[in-house]
Image (cartoon, rainbow, N blue to C red; front, side, top):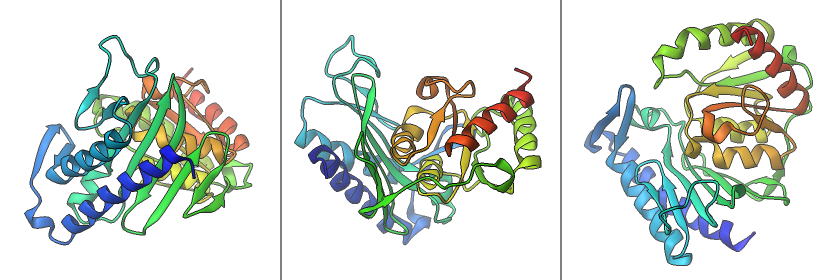
Length: 269
């Protein structure tokens, strides 16, 4: 395992232990609103602190983009894509599930170097499933190599999605897209943690996935997992701007292409 990825694994397991301890007594967890339908808990913050401490102890010159802490840069002029080394962190993707005791949430950590994601992991502390990838070296689940599924037709596919809960004004557009996919796909699922959804595409559990309204920390690690597992990922135009424009489509190569056509038709583009 690459040394930087190994450090990220240590950080993710520290965060997972914090999350698992808190899950044993959810009534004691303090919850606050960031915005409508968007929650943060003390567990999110404690888990992110543990991750950042672990990463910066090993790599003190690196920058951080964390969901709860914001962008901690070593240089004022630095951006997400220009940074030499920037860790993109979601300490608890699926906070709403966690609050309700629904065991579908994960830790997501990615390293971007000069605009390229080079290391990524998604850790599910409930199932002790660790999805990892290093650019050019493949994707793994608990050290076992994973690949996207062999399915080629949307009609045979299980598709993951997520509702635009932060962007309620976009719900009508989403419903058109959801209908178009649901009419064609074998089935559609919406568990509520995009990092895990992308890990499931990478491991062949899903054949495709789409969502909008996502932030970089929701998808950075999962995007690398999909690519290293032989899948494709892009925005709704099939381009590479998904980290910035909050749109993501992923899947096996042929399912990805078919979904782009379906979504374009539903959006009238």
